[in-house]
Image 1 (cartoon, one colour):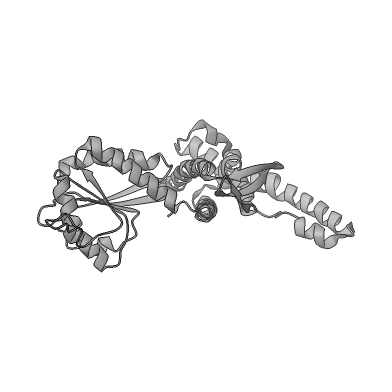
Image 2 (cartoon, rainbow, N blue to C red):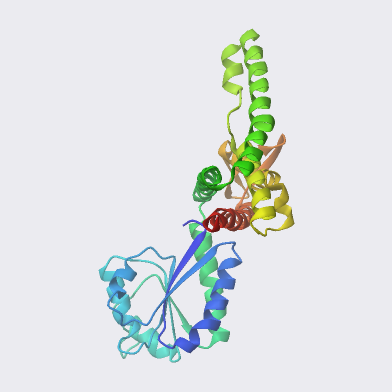
Length: 321
C-alpha cells in the first residue's frame, strides 16, 4: 500500500453511487490517503480482469442484477484473491445465510473468510465502512512499509523536480533563462564551490581524514538546492504565466525542507525500536529525538499529498508554454 487506497465497488443503482462515494472518500481521506474508487455493475466483460487487480477493499451489493454476491465471491476465491470484501443488502439475513451457505439447521456448510456484512441502509453501512477501512489501514500500516512509502514518494519528487528544471531549460525565454543561470551561478554554484574547497582543505589537513570525508555532506545539487531552483522557476511561472499557488509556496524550498526533507533525512537514519508495545522508528532532528509512529506518518502523508499537488501543478503549467 502506498498513499493510494484503492476500492473496487460493485453497485448497479447508479443514482445510489454519488453520496456513497463522497462518504467513502471522506473515510479514506481521514487517514490522509488518496481514494481511488472504481465502480462496476457486476455484469461487465472485464469483471474477472478487474478482480485480479490490486485493491485494498472490495465493496459489493449482494443483489446485483443478473448475478449475486456469492457468485462473485466464489470467483474471487477461485482466482486465489483474498482482498477484504464488504457485502451489503436490504435483506441482511438472506445474504449472510447465502454467503455462508447455512442449511436449515443453521449450520455453516461452507464458511467464507475475509468478508464483512452490512445492511444497505446508509446509517448502518457508513459506520461499518468506517470500521472496516480503519482496520485495513491499521493492519497494512506496518512501520517498515510506512518508511518505504515516505522514502519512495520523496524520491519521486526528486525526479519531478529534475524534469521541471529540464522543461524550464527547453521552454523558457533567453531572458528567463538568464535569470535562472545567474541565480544558479551566484547563489548555488559559486558558494558551493567556495564551501567545497574550504571543506576539502579542512579534510586534507585533518589527521582523521577517513572520518572527515565520510561525514562530509553532498556539495553538488542536493535536495534543498534543487528546491531553491524550483522556487525561482515558480516565481517566473507565477509572475509571467499565471500560475496560482498558496502564499506559503513563495518560499518553496523552506516548505519542502521543513515539512518533508528533514523528516526524510531523519527517517533514513532512524533506528527501529518499541514504544508501549508498538514498533516505531526513532530518529533525530536538530539534535532532538523524533519518534516516527502512526500519528507522525499520518502527518507526513498529509504533507506529501499537498506537496504532490503543488509540484504536479508546477509541472503541468509547462504544457501551456
